[in-house]
Amino acid sequence: MRTFHYRWEWQLRSSPDALWPLVTDTNRFNRDVGVPHLERVADPWPSGGPTTAKSAGRRRLRLVRFGIPIEWEEEPFEWVRPSRFGVMRRYVTGPVATMRVLVDLAPSGDGGSTLTYQVWAEPRNALGLLAIPVQVGALSARHFKRTLRRYDQLAQTPRATIATTTRVRFAPGGRERLATLAAGMITDGADSSLVSRLTATIEHDDDFAVSAFRPYALADRWHASRRMVLELCLRATRAGVLELRWKLLCPLCRGAADGLTTLADVHTTAHCESCHIDFTANFDRSVELTFRPSTAIRELDQFQFCVGGPQITPHIVAQQLLASGEHRTLTIPLECGRYRVRTAGQPGGQLLSAGATGLGRIVLRADANGWPEGEPAISLKPELALENGTATDQLFILERMAWTDQAATAAEVTALQVFRDLFATEALRPGEELSVGSVAIVFTDLKSSTQLYREIGDAVAFGRVLSHFDVVKGCIADEGGAVVKTIGDAVMAVFTRPAPALRAMARAQASLAAPPNGVLPLSLKVGIHYGPSIAVTQNDRLDYFGSTINVAARLEGQSSGGDVIVSDAVCRDPEVTAWLADQANELTVEPMEVSLKGFERERFALWRIRGHSRTKLI
Image (cartoon, rainbow, N blue to C red; front, side, top):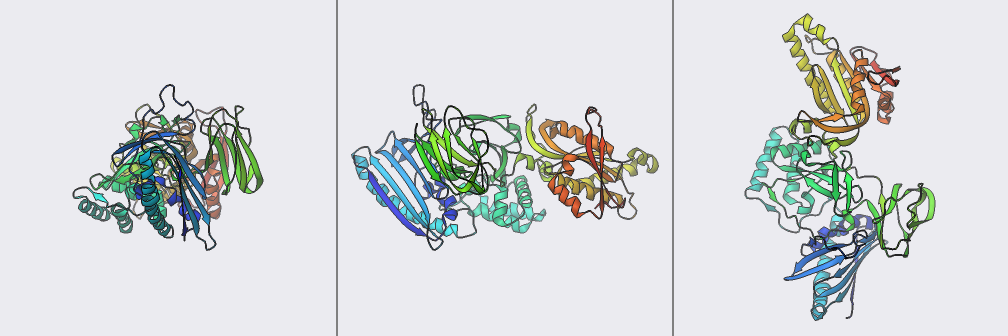
């Protein structure tokens, strides 16, 4: 039968870069133009079916329209950011045989864009001959125009999310409950302006925006402190306004492989259904904390309207499906940084470094020999010649290697004092061990505490020791760290970076050495080390394990009180180096080399940081 071809063109005021994240969010776009929600077909290719379908990124999907079940095989979306994307669907049931969509975004002379939307549709039967002109040629055309015009308006405003096109559904009494709980948060000391913004988000943003929102993305949108917004969301969860979810992120597509309500549900190994791979979970990359409104406040639809658009994997700059033996050349604008070209059906990939100087053209070939070694330098607008030298279809993927910094990872969240105070029982399943990447571990102890008890009596000394814990914990919390545990008079704390750990300990020592009148001064011994660690559960609490912890515990023993002993890894950290340079007139930094108990075969380069005054370290 004849193939229908429709082509629409709109002049929009926003640039292609501004429109791209809105137009390519095909899950939201399909909902907004009236496409019914869909579902994946489980195990669509049984034994004897297409052997390369999964490796080439194809999916089997189904929806119901006007009571007619429609099922199709969808090829992976293809795109080149920020100028073009499209998809091909081959229908198994329903009145349509095939449908291809292609969208082009080109800059116009006035700073806006020319958006061209094309559809090719082939009917399967007489019903398709009637349905395509009505549904695609008339109804969809109106919906496309209305939706794209609205997206154009949104792209020119500072809002980063799309306002809902449907009525927000509150739970019975939910709106009143939200107002009451928000007022209680303000009474308890939460920032009233941030609480107001959070309640407005819950009241007005659409289901996609609030079903798994990132606190750091909210903070950037509000031009607010990331840590303050994260702490606000944690307090809102404890108050009953929000619910938290731990997302397991696939290292390839970086999509959420799973959503969990507690850390106890996190396992060392996880599986991504989209990429068909098993991967090892870790706190610093693959476990992310997100939030959504409490079900007692707002009801959310969890339907999907598209599963493969470009905005689902925004780190992928280009994606192209090549048949066996096919060649294709793309010209792609890039930002400075590292990239990787890989295919969905083969292991490994080719690393690339994009910069102001580099190759203007490079051949990237997938074949049985694997990818070449090295990391060629390419220009910021190179020609990429893709070649499929394998016997099967290959989905070529060009992706940025840098991960988004808007993810609140488990490594960061669990090193926050507010989290440990509010969610003390959040811990891993006993026996699970997950990497947290590199963290700064602090150990402190009071100097001559035994003598203190003898000189001023047990009751007075015990009170002073307890008050010292409050001082140390407060300084740690102010710098974004967390107390892991106390052991006698000692404290173990964790920070995601060395510089905040050093600043916190400097303030704690200064405060304890020069207390208010009538309060006995104390001398605090401190050791700090920075390195990789493992998260474990001990005594029903989240703890840390590994050689980094063992070294940090021994550094405190090298302190004489009023000084901080840091490892070479801490002292060489760029942020620490800059901080020490700024404080050069007040601090002395002395190198030392020692052996540590349990590490007798090694000599450790350490640094003693001390203030010129015994009562002032900063």
